[in-house]
Image (tube, rainbow, N blue to C red; front, side, top):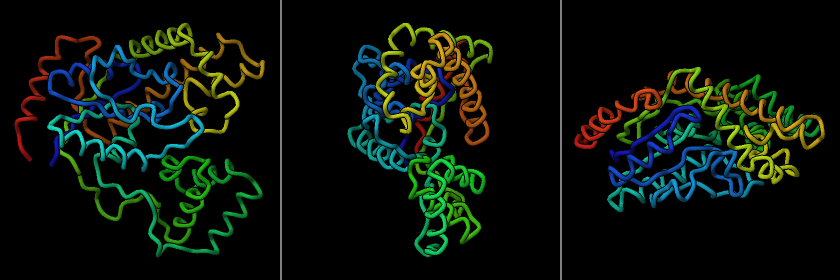
Length: 307
């Protein structure tokens, strides 16, 4: 199995800094596992790594989509696996970094994202197509969320074809389109680092980060999604909160508070997700930076063992 180093954790906990430090130490190259950093022109609100911060380390799956485009977990899964192969072929260590848990899990295991043709049921499909026509995409997706929340988590509401397909499969088979028929198999010999810290300290860091983003031009950057409110990019935290401001219904101070609130809630969900779905090597480098050598020792031991 190919070795893949993975760094996960909530926002504002130091994933970028650690990934670059470890890439320099272990001849690594970095693959972003973040669903928002794929968008060009949206850098401040997504906390995208800067050229200076990269310190010459190659980064992949950043700035690979226009802000009007959708981006799915299956696209990430396919593209990230191509980069893992490429990095390995050049004798380097792939380091996947991100907070989008679903992306990380779909990459590391052989999750099949999509339904089989034997589950086709044209009559059921027609029923949901009519529902979408009568009530709209968002109501259709809401129906999927009530029927099959696992599929709704993975399918964007703008992707009407996939939403209808998921509803069709569930009604026809009683099973989620995302449910694996067998236990998903691990595809890589991965070492998963989970960054965490004290909850109150994390929230304080998130608040400070948002203040810094606002000062560094986030309001100006957010105007780029003003005319595309229904896109995936515009629905991201750090952007969707600006729409009341654009409509004259909120101040920038109120926007900043909303971003902080949503970011804190998201961080809490991220931590819960990683604890429940994966089993990282948890470490708090914010409060205990002196534990880094112990982590590095563990990584070296992992690198030396062949699977």
